[in-house]
Image (cartoon, rainbow, N blue to C red; front, top):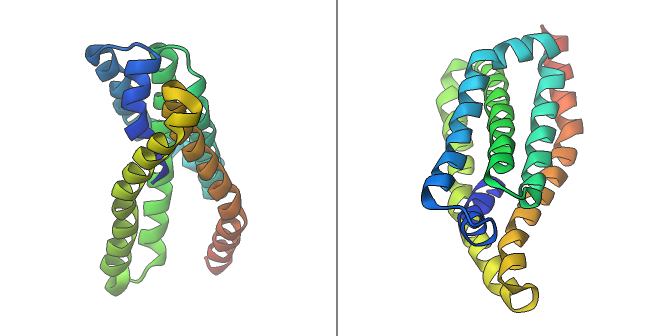
Length: 182
């Protein structure tokens, strides 16, 4: 939800606040692919090196901080750099979380659990987009267009950071329980 709320606002922010052309914005979006490809190449090694107990919280924290940094980026190059790091952290999270789900969930329940996981993940996309548009529309009158386009970025990054801190302790407890069962 947070990511798609930010991505919705990002198109207009990049065009109107940063002055990026369609081609330049396409380049910025390519940064996601670069970050994902990099994580595909080294994400498993990062997880082995740090262990899941450090990798997962770190990936969440990096994603949240980089999402908060997005409205501060003054140009497309730095924005692209944020997106490389954001996607690399996100794919590394996916590598670890999917691997853990496959190990922890019994075979006969795995399909149901993965379906619910996807429903929640994909179901939040339209909600994030709608909320972003709603926030821009409400804020434009009192923040101006430029500020209103940045507000969903700040809110998405802040919410993601708050959810990261809320998830840290339960995540650590779950990983410790899993380790104790091995």
